[in-house]
Image (cartoon, rainbow, N blue to C red; front, side):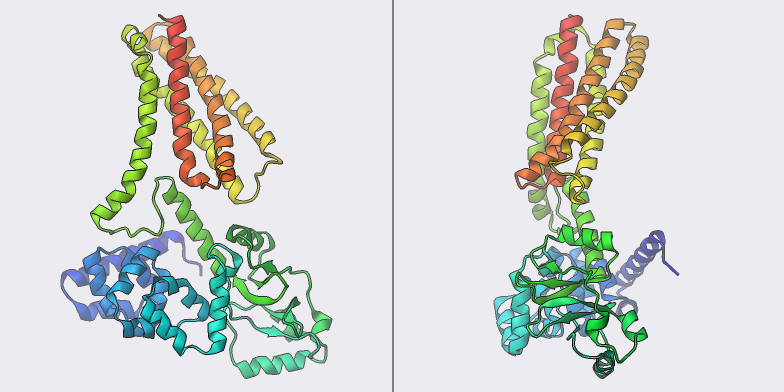
Length: 454
């Protein structure tokens, strides 16, 4: 039975309430019982939701054997704070039990003495595996991959493969296929487990080899990996180096984590925040981060105010303009945001590029033209009825049409331009768009009013 998102949310909130009650009454026995029943990911989520003083208490009660896995699930800033509270023996013990690919995720946050001790305790093979993972950035297939790959040779029989699997005793989760490699470890194809157990055991691996699954180069961007998994309904996929040598595999749980992180990033980036920030970071640290974004927005606000100031004489003569100005800017902002969101999503999914951007731009302009005329008529009628001035109604109607058309063009071109410059459209697109729609909206409305009403 599948648990709904609402049920999971209620469960998380209930756990948080229970833990807070334990902390309030200093009931460490009950706290230990709650933590013992929680998955490391749930503990990580709990730690992120607690103020720093309470977080320290809960962290001190986390079972030692789960500390390493919990560190994997918390965000970067919380992880750094937790690591600073641990002594060297604790860190070595927590990191020493991790898989190589998991260790690579937290290695940059560990103190240098701990890193040295861990490397010295590792076998030569494990050190080489760790180095392989660390070569690739986090946002590539190589950074996402696991090294727990089960590979087989093409010339052996299925009976031999089955004996080998029984000898292993268990398979990494989730495993739906075995990858086939030659003597140089170059990827040749895969054998599905379902086909392996249902085929004639006297057949060779080569006879049931599936060559349709293309390997993923290690330098493939993570967003492209997510698209491949979505388009081909993959559970796992092989990762190879530039020579076609099998390095590891990416599994669906890695991709789900990636999608969730990307969604978190997009939501937070719209407000100039980072999904890795600690929700309960010190006030001065949080203030410093947000001050930069507030400063950027202040500059754009001054720009819009400057445009309004150019027409102060017009506003003094027709006070109704001051009442109606926000309508023009708001309509343009909403229309532009709709186009901007559509474009950012299309770019993220690989559905928008230079080859089809012009057609999409033309479509968005036509949509804005239709909506602009529709709502311009509505707003004009309201303005005429309100202020008993037909010319004022015509002016605001024309201004809305102009602003919605400009908003459509800006909403389509801004993310493409930011992408070409290497900037994140989700982070900077909203601020630039708001500036454009505000400035153009005020300029169009007040400019037309100056021409026809003064």
